[in-house]
Amino acid sequence: VFLYCFGLSLFPKVKKLLKSQYFGDFVPSVKDGQFMGRYPNSLLTLFYPYTLLRDIVLDQPIAESDVPFFWYVHKSDYEIGKKVMTDCYGLTLVELKDYDSIEKARRMNIVSSLSRQHVVVSPHIREVCEIFTMDNFGRMFAFFRHPLDYELVPEMPTFPDKDNYLTRLLSDVHEGPIEFKQLGIAKKVVYVTTLVGKIDRMVDSIIRWGQYWGWQFVPGKGESCVVDIVDKYNPEETYIDHESEEWKEFYAKNPLDCQLFEQSDASWRGQIQTAIPYETQLKRAEPSEDEEDDEEGEEEEE
Image: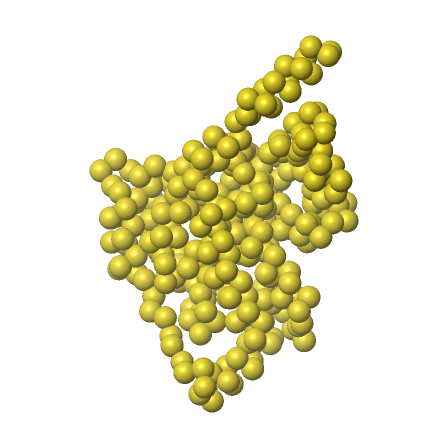
């Protein structure tokens, strides 16, 4: 903590290390072949396999080796995401809809051959996370919606308990009671590893994704391409009087997913300032005049 707070001004070499986008990779923790995080024994570390996803905010700028991952669980999210990425941005999609294709991709180390112009697309978040490696981390983006509006794709698993579906999915606790620990895991996946999209702000969300990744529109296409697709597929939101018995019954059954949705909403607002365009990421990563002077001083000392 002392070094993180004061090292930048006290030690040029520490400063150079802390400013590096790969700083965390110097202290990896690997157990039984699984990457357990870049900050072992720290509250900053997620649980495996989410450790193979980049921190959307802290791990900027995007590394050339990072692989985009579009995670979806709802039908219209998939339809809109796929159409926009191919028609508007001209991206190549690597669709992994079933467990066999995911396992094949993992065995082939497919991520080693992908670039920022390829997007891994899948509803199976935990399984797909395991295809990423310490050489090719994933960067995830996804839409979130209120539990009232869930429209799960057929590929999604079903759980014995029918409450708090998304919290159960992300925490990997599919039956029995779930509490704030599981909600905490799910929330961390949202605010740490996900570039968040909202169904009531789909156009703004998609434009932000494109700017964050540095994607360019297909020649002759622009934001109107995104608007047209969203207008065609955009799902309607459900509104229920929060004083009604219907709402009270629904919330009593799904309180954790409702709170997880609120977290996604807060993350979307926060990322207005923190998930910055790719060009800006690169500019901010450039050494300042003071840093260049420090490096010159180090070379002279050596």
